[in-house]
Image (cartoon, rainbow, N blue to C red; front, side):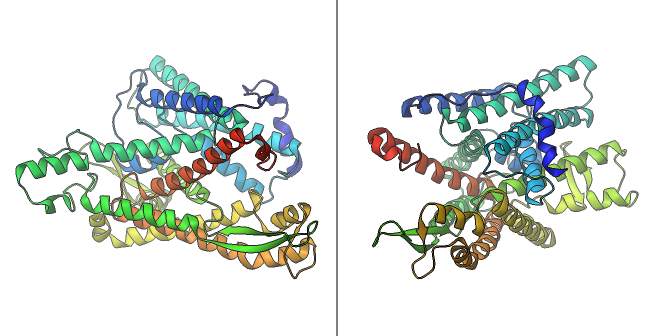
Length: 477
């Protein structure tokens, strides 16, 4: 039955919009053009407001919005959230063997892609409907609500097709990575140089360096910027933590264990198979972010639909999440699970409620480990899969027989342990960075460093293949 699940979506593939795989080799400059075009479209969409909706900030979800390339009140209201959520659910279903899908088979890969696109469209519609019905934009007239829904659905389709355009080989990397990197870069730039007035600090700007210039020109002590009055405003502590986080993550990206390999066909040929400390990269953080964002969103939705009861009246709402309105009219979580999946985002917030801080960090690390182990199987990174790939390529570990079992037994000593350790490390880096108020959020910096590193490798590989066509066969192109 599990194997027939993906087949149910096969007829729908004929009517789904699709980007064709290029039938010719796309040159470096052409890939650069399409990648830049997709990025420009994304940036334009973040600035186009939804019809009838005021474009404002959204307090508690600001950090998660940066990660999901979302912009409050614009066409990018949903960002990449529906795509990531759809991917998360499908990966979990495949990883738990509830759906039988062999990613080494082209037919299964095609069905998986089709199902993922359908899930993305469905989740875009569900989230758009929930935003409108749940009162995210207040009470909207019927016609306006329909127009807003259609705008969000169309924007979601554009994001999905943009990602597919890049992934099909017309650009570099993936659209999801590109949007995340752009969102984090926007967030960091805004926190550094925004001239907008800061909340709770009259006379000082929101951006750190603009506020620094104001303090220096007025002769006030720099200690005023060490930890600013409102934790939402970037501080000197946050700037130092941001630089430290970048350096630590860059260092961690380079830590690896290298297993010696020899080629059976050529005596004396030696190579190495690197097992990085961050073996599954930053995917666990993306999945954990998607999970936390959906917990926040749906708990707020259920709380609103239940009549916004105070704590103690509804057991399930008390367990899932309770909210209250702030003086500014926005909602903030005050209890339940949702209270512990939102980072304090400042050192003052950690000191104010250390139980929340440690609860958030524990939940984040736990889910990063779970998603790391899940992706190990789903992403084709398990010891058995890697061993088969190495043996099929004619490689073996010196001193061991050339067999899949022998190679797998060696890989099992390292890969599971490195996967768990990597999940713990990325969770700790993302969580602790937030505690010091890093610019762009801890998860955002973790993701952006990994994405920049991947883009650097992709661009260098593409450039070498362009200049020396003989290397194209080595790179698999």
